[in-house]
Length: 149
Image (cartoon, rainbow, N blue to C red; front, side, top):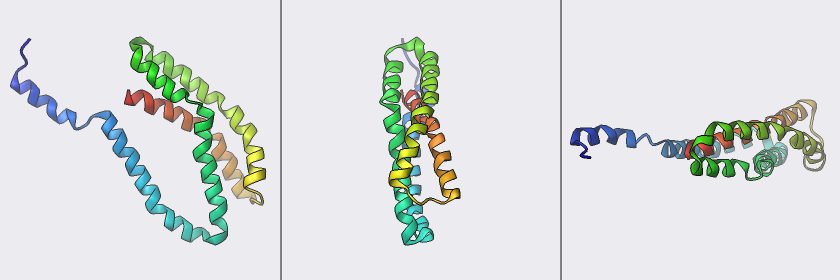
């Protein structure tokens, strides 16, 4: 089968908008914005608030990885291997992500007692709200891995 030169030229601009490349640039952009905004936030918090904020951010970065237990990567791998199961795997992954709310809630109390003592009412509310949103991070990770595949 012969492909015309006009058809090849028509596909080249679409190669620049390759979804994995776009996702990689998006992640780099988000990391860049986080690095740029960190000094601004640190100055606004002052010396006392920096440690608590760093501990809370560490919890929010590590918790989705631990609760995800490799499921997002496994789903991405299964989608790449088996063609017709994409919708079923994504649906199952989202159900799993919703179930991570239970361990997130159970671990939030001892983590707060050990790492974040002395939080005020507003800070405690923000902490527990953020922990309640951990399943959304797990679901996002599943969706991102499926989109990359």
